[in-house]
Image (cartoon, rainbow, N blue to C red; front, side, top):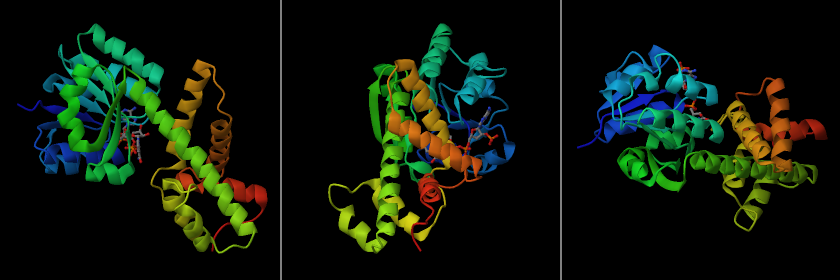
Length: 296
Ligand code: NAP
């Protein structure tokens, strides 16, 4: 029999993920801080709880998908949080992108009351959340990963158990280093091509299929050329993730010079009021250094 699933945090990601659990036939109990976001899920058949504690009291598996580290601490460990209602043996799956170190601490607090935790941050954007095609990077005990698998498969396509508590968050941060350093390369290359008066579309066609090709170049490059800054992933969320990367790198004592540089560029964009634009707006930071613009 399928376990009832609680879902806390019905934002851009959580809303689609909870809807896919309902579509897959799970009994779903939802809570969101702002009640308006609950309406479409309730209409699709979800039961509604009045606190994270009440969600936990009614469900064997509780999924959280909220913004940042303090938010996960609040909904799990805070007043009327999950820990106040959770039953012994229940499983919390945190799909937010947060600090690996705090993840391990929360897993310890849940373990102390007889409950389990997996970190399961996601990649694939709002489209992936809506379509159920997310990549999910999972940290925790293998037995709990097996238990979570039917729910994870309802929300994602590529599910990888990467290691113990916090390892899912670490893998997600690896993903973010690759995303931003690649985007930095795409931005510099397009600026160079523009300054050299190349046809940018032909240039993308020429290099996109070779060794220099990448998802970022092929998907965000054309958006940069069209100067279309609509977000798949915002500068603000990207900046939050880079802060997590740099904090974890600092704890481990390793240098990440390129990531640190991109972090500073994103900070400049935030100060210019561009935090809501897509992460490919990184090119605008270089444009201001170069005194020229890319694209038409
Ligand atoms: P979002 O649309 O801004 O939604 C955030 C959700 O968290 C909302 O339900 C919000 O509640 C809730 N929340 C935030 N702080 C809270 C608190 N202190 N107490 C209770 N609820 C709180 O964000 P999102 O895009 O869904 O992102 C959620 C997580 O997924 C983040 O960690 C993000 O980095 C990660 N992620 C996002 C994407 C993406 O493309 N968007 C991709 C991969 C991973 P309210 O409705 O009350 O504000």
